[in-house]
Length: 112
View 1 (cartoon, rainbow, N blue to C red):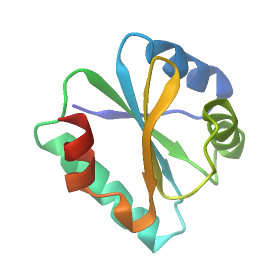
View 2 (view 1 turned 45 degrees about the vertical axis):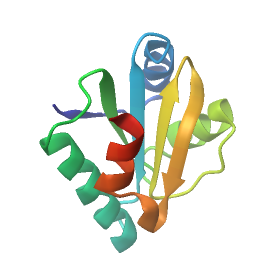
View 3 (view 1 turned 30 degrees about the horizontal axis):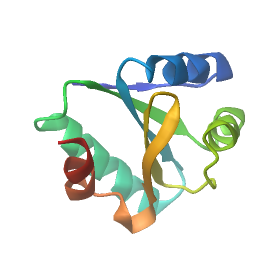
View 4 (view 1 turned 45 degrees about the horizontal axis):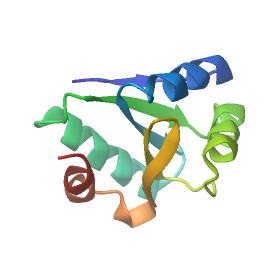
């Protein structure tokens, strides 16, 4: 299983639309933050193991793709945080967590 990086609002709209059919797990990652680097490592460890096959995995770099990050926060009604994971189903936020709570164990508990 792989994660896909999105960089445009159009790509975000596609992810949001797909959430009507499949779960979507988005990680918002800051490339300058050590806490975010740890969260991304946890996210990738989950994907490298036995990830839920009914979910798509998406990366958004919040500095490089700020408009996308802001649009996600607006569309889902979530406060922007970084690092942050957001699980969406049926075009709505189902679960979110941030900072040190982004762990393989938390992701596993929600998705599996």
